[in-house]
Length: 278
Image 1 (cartoon, rainbow, N blue to C red):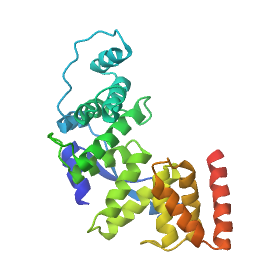
Image 2: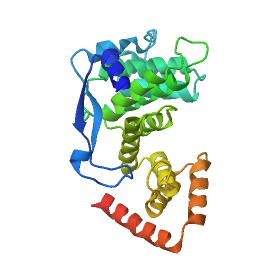
Image 3: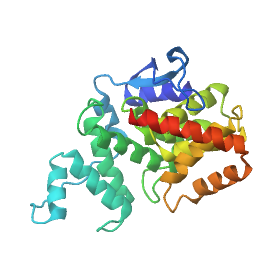
Image 4: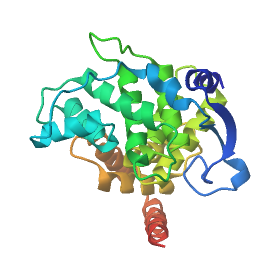
């Protein structure tokens, strides 16, 4: 696909079709040979190629005399956990003046230095989350900065975190990009639906909600009202107070569902929960 060709040149990565976990468009397990997804595999030099993501943060001339200065001290020493914490603080304005560019720079440091780390490394989740954070910044851009809205660049970030690190948030964000593209091709939709199913199976509640909506309403997928209601129920239980759209989607579905739909959804839900425990 065009997107992954661009990702190859941008990241100096090799794109190879790899059979991922076997889940179909509805999130249900399917045969492995039907689940080929475009996945990027890191090659030597990846970290260096990523350095164009942002300008490095200016060194902080400080000694660890407080919690914040300790984080700064550790971050300047290349500690990814400290860099992540500082990035989150600046992104959310938590204890500091909110500064998206500063947050972007800290997240970029993590991506630049650790892109080729093993997915099983202790810091792998932080590295993957840094790629997701960068992708979201590229979706909207940062006002009055050199970071402009760039959907393709965002897709590259999500693709790497979704395929190499298996990050569920990246899989959800990537699925939305494929599914919401105005001129999405049949392949775009197929990839988007499968990334959505992968994220839903990992417990990403926003993916569960979107997949549930699509299945219940038959939105570009064969209608499966019971399975859709199951996913919406799971998503509702994990939704935050700010995610009213998830609860509203569930309420609309449960109001339209027949008794048979509800009974079958309950059976599917019990089976899914039991499978998570095993």
